[in-house]
Length: 175
Image (cartoon, rainbow, N blue to C red):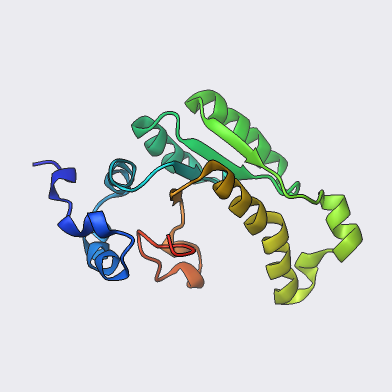
């Protein structure tokens, strides 16, 4: 019996909060590749994957594109990425033949700084505003444009205190 054959019946109700809660232990007991395969075969499409193209991003990109080679891979380019990140994007694009979609905020880095200063130096509120303007709003616009129903992201519990208790599957904006 394959791991996918053991999917709980409540999967068809994954958008129901109770069914989602019942599904979490099953998902938590599976490896990342099984979760990705399950999500792509079970959850509503269109499916997208987002990546920061950080040092550990290659693993998720490789797993997901082996299962679904044409999955849209979203990268938010704030204009502040490191040179190494841009080189890594190019390298993985060439190696994995990614369906890469680069998302940019409405404001260029220079325009952002002229209007708002260096937000990341303005405390927590500044960082939150920077993230909203340069990352969240552009990503939400791209998800809407693509009609994405399932968004795969490489969030890891070990990354930060705020992510320590995340579940493998989460609803966002009621979906």
